[in-house]
Image (tube, helix red, strand yellow):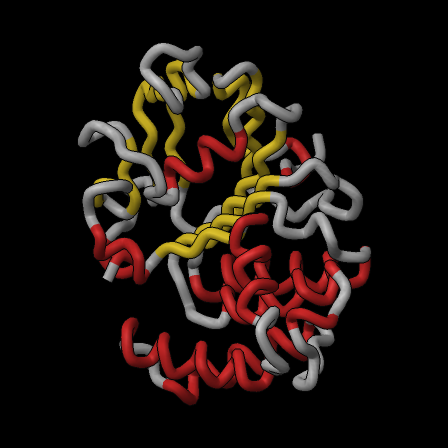
Length: 244
């Protein structure tokens, strides 16, 4: 159990990572290095094209890397498949997948929720009562209605469905890449409160990449700014530092 045995070690460690989508092209990441503490809430910022999404997807194990460059909970980010039970990544791609799931029929959120709980219990070993309780809490926080159908709701409602379904399992590393872009301010604040509680009470590490900074003051413990494929800044967030 990482929370019991990983004390003092970074939950995410990136060591001098230079990586690109092709060998001939310009690297999307150049010499990136960072260590993230267990239980931290990390705000990732940067201009479009700076490399934020690439960095997030690499840490989430979505791209092939040489061993030893990126580790998560002491395990290799790409090569160790056991991390799939401990890491969740929310992005625009999964939102489109959810919409496709409901495109062929009248599948409700309640039906999607039951299928999700059953799959997570079977594959991840989490107790179904725990998953149902977390899913119910998330649905209440995000005001998701059981009768919503993925093919017949707004983008904001679809995003809230995605968040509830993807966050119901108690993962140790939660990564969100522009996952609040379709949310209104009320839903966004509810999401931030939920993520804060996951970090403060469960010890989960949250990495939150966004360009929407309204209402985020005081939420993050750390801030990473990506510029030109480099981590121009990565450390404790000045927004949470004690007053001088």
